[in-house]
Picture 1 (tube, rainbow, N blue to C red):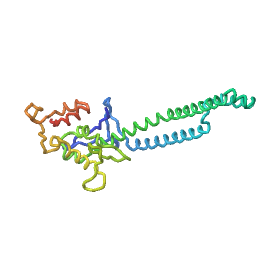
Picture 2: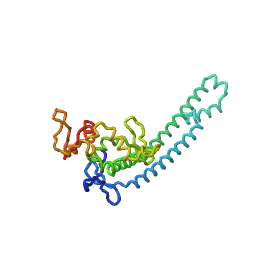
Picture 3: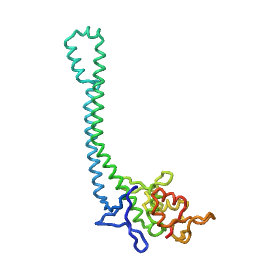
Picture 4: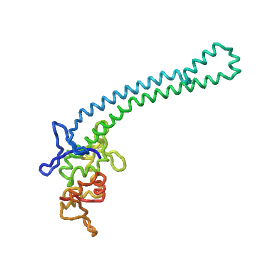
Length: 266
């Protein structure tokens, strides 16, 4: 389960809690952690540079090994060369040793090349893994922060931002440090206010909510009853769930409740 952004309520609105200029997250153990986006971004750049150097070294090693393609067993190749120096060429051909030496040389070179490539892959694999983890944390902070700081969510949405994120968070991706929204068909969402430009976070989120079949249950003043009902009684009434019940669910269950048209009540 990903870390959740810690929030505070003020004047009926939800805001991300910030400590020393950094948003605060709660990990799986309930511990609070401050997320330093600038440090993480710089660390990713550093790891990318280091990975590039390893790739260049790997390519250089592969280039050097190409000179020995066809030689699989260096010791056997050296021995073969010495043998050729000391025996009559016609006898060597008659004995069928030429092809045997060639085959041994090819095998040795290929094994040596594969061993060098494998060694380089294993050397920079941990660096790539660390870089990917840091990038994922940065992406999660950008997406989660977008929902927590959204003016659209604060002013027009009647459910908590994390509930909204559990339903629409997968529609956002971080590309070149920017949040890009995609519709359910996998198409980028473009701005209606600025044709030709990618939609801002709030404009894209509003577009996604407008296309959502149960939007009346999550927007203020559009079917959100605010309490009183106890769920679907089998007579076609609104489906509701209390905040305590909702917060006890995992992210997948929360998303399913939203897809089923449930409304959060106090």
